[in-house]
Structure formats: structure tokens, C-alpha cells
Image (cartoon, rainbow, N blue to C red; front, side):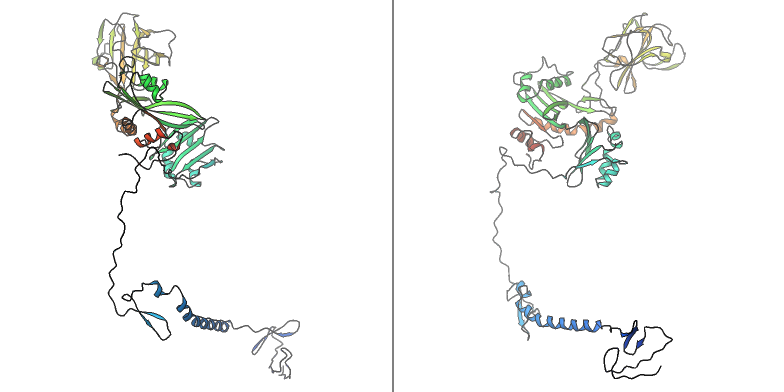
Length: 544
């Protein structure tokens, strides 16, 4: 195609002449020198792209000019200038002025710093501090707890999954699920079961309440660093009651004066029944301290078990601590670990003519070989009555190999007696029956491996056979040696609370069992009602 020249450019309406070269073999759009062209329903020019680099450069130059113009004015009039923020002493800073009138710091010549005058501050004294006034106590609030978490168990939920979902303290979870009596209930959650969890501000578990059924709930709570549990009626609140009394005229009058019920007084006498005759030996001047549990339910109060007690009779101190052993039996013990409940056991539960075999090694008359004889054989006429050596429960009644007809009595979890070679048992006796000391349980015979009518009598204590002739009745059974350290650890807090009661006047105090019991809290409780803030707050001071 040839060059064309026109006076007016038909594309842009300009008289500028543009040289165009069209190649019919090339597709559109096409380019013209200095312009971008496209053909679509006619020929027109594409708008030329704007040079953004150039425009941004112009804007930047304008901004720099404005800042350079305004900076001196702002420097001279600003309230945040360096000069005004520093000390004005001439010995510290020397001011010079440049040609622009801007103040500068001249630090080239160091100058000595003036001595700072001593401030006349008041000497602290204790004149303005008020003495502790127990007549008008002030309470500091207990460390705040986080709101209760109210959780409904969903399908597939376990306690560990719930703890992970709500970001609860998993280290404490391991301690909680190891509680022997309640581990099964905590592991076997049911759909739609209600679980309530309370934490302190440090995310430590304080309480867990698991609804078991319509009437009962499992309450897990923390005391110091250990967790304990109880199954209680829904809505029941446990308190620990501290009582101290002094006998002036009679024990019942002293108990009534401080608000100790007749039932609790009877329980106290039962604890010390082996050591004190409360009908004859109590006299004026005797003292007693009692710690027991009580339960509140919808305004009703129900008394629980005595946890610790002390009775001073004629200057002699008797103390009792409630303790549940590893075997599951609950007894009262002295602080040294001796059981207060004494068991009276007969050395010979039958009227015998002679002892045919003693305790220890012997040659068996039937087997004709030497072996250890675990009891004593009392030779007696056929059919002579055999009585229970002590109060107990029948654990076995029937034939027992070479023993023949045998009865085994369980006196407590640690003490058993055995009666063998009987002719017959007392009628209507069966396993599980309770018998009294001296009650006839059978008759002398010759059943089993025996050469003549006699009673084979055994005493088994803590799994070891004892010589019936060496048993001193009544028997006081101490804590086994391997469990004594654990016993001392568990009862230490109760002993401390008993010692605290000794320093008080006759009183009765009820408080949350997790709060520390001190003389100060006891005195405050005498002023403020039990239902007051004493049960919900901690006391910010203590007496020395």
C-alpha cells in the first residue's frame, strides 16, 4: 500500500500528518508510530497510557516543598520541643542559635552538674495505723473465682474430653480420677448428665459436682493440694464445727451451754468409753474439745460424725482421731496410732479339762510328723458348750477339711477367731449373723482329723496367728507399721485444729472445711453469725 498524505488526520482530527502503512496480511489491531491503533467497526486510536512515574515524581516534589516550608514554623511554635522538655539550668545546657533561628543543643563543652538539694520527706510512722479491733472486723474478699461452668454430657463425652474442650487443668484431672471411691462414677458418664465445675482465677479446680440421680450428687472438692469427695443429697452443704467446753457443774450442762446436742454428747462418750466412765469419773474443771461435721439442706441442719475429740479428765488428756484405714474400716485412734476401740477376747472359750496341744511346733498325733500348730487344743467332754470369744460376725460356718465342723468369727477387719472339731452348731445360726461375747455357738466334738473330743481355738490378727494364752484382753490394735507415716500425714491437720481449740474460751464455731481454722476466725465467729461472710471470705490477719 502506498503512502497517503491528508491535510486533516481523520483519526484524531488534527492537521498533523501521520504516515500509515497497512499490511493486509496482518491482523488487527496494528500500530502506527507514536500511537496504538485498533480497528473494530471503524478505525480509531487507543488512548495513550499515562506516565505514572512522572506524575508521582511531581507529587513527591510538591510534598517535600510543603514540608520544608512548614517545618521551621512548627519547630518554633511546638509545645513538645526538645528544649522545653529538658531542664532549664544554664549549667546543664547551652543554647545557640543558627542562621535559621532554630534552637540547637551545644554539647561540645561539658559542664558540672549542680548538686541536687535534699528533699524534705516525712519520716514514716505507725501513728496513723489503727489497732486491730475485733469488735468491728473488716473482711477482705476471698480470691475471686471464675463463674461456674454448667455442662451437659454429650454422646461420646468423657471427663478428659470435657476438660480438653473447656481448657480445664488436666494435671488436676489425673488426681481426681484416681480417687478410689469415685473413679468409677467419674469414668462412666451418661448422656444428658449434668456436670458443674468451679475454678479459681489461676484455673485451679475448686469444686466439681456431678448429678448422679434425682436425689444424690457427687461432690469433688480441693483442700490445699489434695482432692476429696463425698456423695451427698443434692443441695447439701458440709460444714466443720469446732466446739470447746469446760465442766463447771455437770457435763450435760456444759454441753448445753455451748450448744452441743445430746446426740453429739452421747457420741463423744462412746468414743472414749474404754478410757473414761462418764457417769462417775467426770468432775468440775474437766475440759472437752470436739470437731465434727454437719450438713445443711434447705435450712435444716443434720449432724455428722466426730472427726477429732479431746477430753481432759482429772488432768489426764485423752485424744481421738477418726481415720479410715487402707482396708476400708473406720476407727478412732490416738495420735500415736493406737485404736481407741478395744476388743475383749476370751483366752479360752470353753470350760476345758486340760490343754492337749499348745501353740507352736508339735508332732501331729494323726499325721505323725512335726509341723507348726496355729492354735491351742482344749480337751473337754463331748457336747460341752462353746461360746463366742468376743463380739463379732459369723464369716464361715460348715466343714473345713481336717478341721471338721468349723466356725470363723470376724471381730473387725483385722481380727478373727476360729473354732474347729465341733460336734454340732447352735441351731438357726447362719453366715452373716452377729453374735455377742459369751453366746453359745457350738458344742465340743471330734469331727475332722482328731483323736478325741476337744476344741481347736485360733486367733488370727493382721493375717498372723497369735498364741491365745499371750493375748492381753482387751486388745488395742495399732496402725500397721507400714501405714503409720500415711496415718500421721492424714491426721496432722486435725491435731493442729485441736491444739487451736485449747487456746479459746468455751465456744462453738462452724465454717467451711476448706478454710483455715485459727484463733482469729474463732473470735470473729463469736461476733458475726455463722451464716455471714466468715464462710465465704478469708481473714487478712492472724494473731501471734
